[in-house]
Length: 241
Image 1 (cartoon, helix red, strand yellow):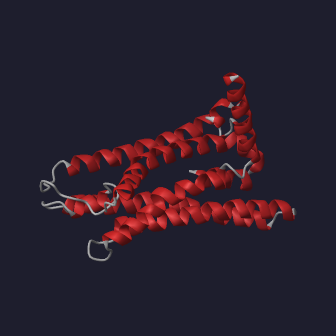
Image 2: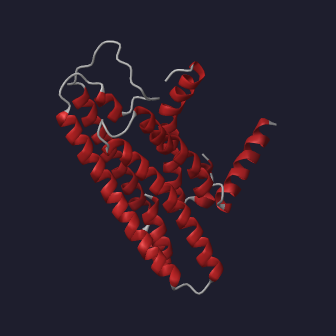
Image 3: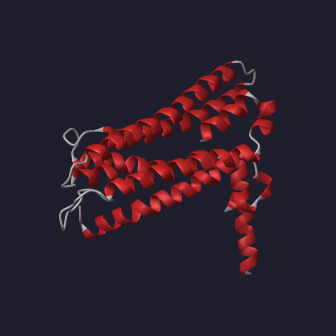
């Protein structure tokens, strides 16, 4: 909301940040409430933008134009929606026993497939293939971007600028590794290698911990976003008066 209503930060980076925030809200709102209810009841795209900003600063506004930003976000949404739709169609072909309980805090796909009473070979193959592809292409882009960023930073003369860029990119890379590492562990592990407790812990890392860290890394340490939030809150306060 702060980014959308503040024209001072209508740039490519903040466009991607607003999309990340929206995805985090949607993601956590489908998993965290159920987890909290179970506890109460005692019942069981950012790397490319940074690469262009650091490695090609003079061409940043030309390369990261609004059309490209919208296209990148739209492609991500369409790809994930298509994959989710295929998973749903495959799930509709499976058979489950009445009253089946999933030993997890939300209906994660890998856990749902484990309790199916029919053949899940096709579903598992599609799950493994899509997981590898979804991880492979973004991870390759992130690794390439990071290598180019490090190369550019080593050539920078300003020590303060180099430290700031290393700090931001290092935090970003840590969260990305945490997200991909735990999510791949959940979706690529076979039924016999991980217990439901271990899968739940790994799921918490990428469904709760990483969305919680994202605002601190990308927004609350950013003076532009903090300024936008202050202006938004002051506008709301003046309106309420």
